[in-house]
Structures are given as structure tokens and as C-alpha cells.
Image (cartoon, rainbow, N blue to C red):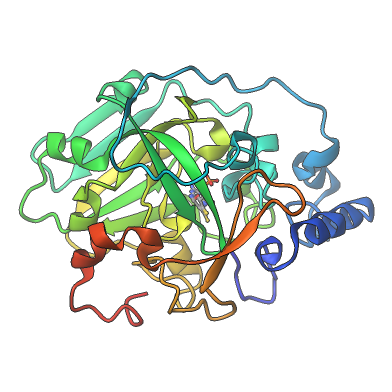
Length: 337
Ligand code: MTE
């Protein structure tokens, strides 16, 4: 994600620059003492904070423990080559833990996910309060989905979870419910990016997202509690995150504590930060470029490493058009980007 402001919270360099060049430059900046989080030139941040986020030379602390999950196969899965687990769990966007792609993995290993409380509230007949164990109660499916980041890279990831509609139906939305608003945990003590505008990229926290109710009820819209056959690691949004495969990745909000059914279109984090760059809908669309880069193609990350990534054409709705195009019949997708 990239903000246009003079503060240059520039994370898309990796997307538009060859990865090796990007990492070399990053290392160089780190050696020069400039680089704290990702490519953020936070010269005014304190040395202590920079230390926290410069993952490269950090001693390895206790690793987060993932548990195995049993799931059934889903007909909604793609047969495309899956991204290596080490890439999907090591190249992340989770600004609460830092702006660099390897910061979330390096900085989130101590994140506490149990106990957890997820509430489903608002315009519903039966509000829900789910504790950690309840998150895993519905029948679990494996869904192998394409994930297309707005920064023009993509992966193919085997999520484990269940349709969001499963929870929403239990809560019984009332006739007043037209949208669904989502919120990430707000805990600056655990998520240092939330407490410091340099480390957290200057966006407003907690991270919030939203969908129209029909989008939220769509069978492809998924609540993931696992990935690669195990519970989610923190860097991927443990213990529960959204996955909306036909939209840019920033819609897929991580570490959710609140789901609220509402009447009006909810505010969303990236739309608040840069409304001309990140729309509410954020449907993957190769014909509608980001104001500062093309969305016509993407870098598919499979194994990672030099020469292994491929540049491929981006598909309308990330290839899920047959299933979701009807949701937008008659809408001007340039206006509602
Ligand atoms: N959710 C929260 N709370 N904070 C974030 O910074 N980043 C988003 C999304 N969800 C983000 C978030 C973006 S930009 C992307 S591309 C995806 O998470 C990345 O998911 P992944 O790291 O599991 O691939």
C-alpha cells in the first residue's frame, strides 16, 4: 500500500522494482541506519523503535505455535500452482506490525490470539459473541484462492475456514442491514504500529473494512482461521481474517474482533487515507489503473527468489467474474472503483 503524501510511506517499491534490487537497497539503507520499517525513512523515530522493527538482525524469539486443522476440500478452489508457504507467511502486509514485507513475521510472533472475542452485532436479531474455540466450530473447508494485492503482486494460498455467510446467517441480519463493517483488534501494546505513526504508516487505527451485505453473503467470501492446513500465524491475521478473492487484498482485513451489520456504507481504512486511490469496492480490475501504476498485470509469487516470479495479465475480478459479476450489473466500475 502506498500513500501519495510527502511523508512517502512507500511500500510499493517492491512491486514496481525487481525484488532483488529492492532488497539490496533495503539492506543498504539498513546498514546506513536509515531504514526502520520497510522503506520508511523515519529519521525522527527513536533508535529503540527502529531496532524493534529492523527484523534482519533481530535475535529469534519464541515462535508462534500453529495447530493442525482438518478440513474438507472445496469446489471453489483453483488448481493453479500454489505459492510456497514460506512466501505466503513471510511476505505480508500487516501495518500494525511494521511496513516492510518481512516485518509482520518478524514482529508478530508473540501476538496473543487466545483468549479472543469476535462479536457480530448491529442490525441483527441474534448478536453473537465468539470466543477463540467458537471460531473453529463451523465445518472447516480448504479454499485455494488467488490473492491479488493492489500493489500488483499476487499469490495462490490455501486458506482454511468457512463462508462469512455461515456466521451472518446465525446472527440473522434484520431488514435494516445493508452493509457489513469489520474491525481489527486495537491493542497498541501488542501491535506497535498502532501506537506510532512512523511505524504504522500514518494510517488511522484500528484497521476497518466493509462490504455490501450481498458481497458479504456471497459464497466466495470467506472467514479464514487457517492456512496451509494449520491455524493462521499472526502475520497472516490470526486467529480470524477475511478473504474476499475478487477484491484487492486490502479488503481482506486481519485479526478481526468486530463484525457489525449497518445501514450505511461504512468507512474503510485505505479509503480514509487516500480516497482517490483506494475505493470502497476495490474490485480487481485490469482496466482501471491505480492513479500511479498500472493494474493490467501482476507479479505472481510462487517460490520466491530470483527468476521464479512470473508477470501475468491481471484478470477482471481476479478471475472470479463468472461468480461475482452479477453483483455489479449496471454499475460504472470506473466510478465505483
Ligand atoms: N489487515 C490489517 N488489519 N492490517 C493490514 O495492514 N493489509 C491488507 C490485508 N489486511 C492489512 C490487513 C493488505 S494491503 C493485504 S495485500 C493483505 O492483508 C495481505 O494478506 P497476507 O499478508 O496474508 O498475504
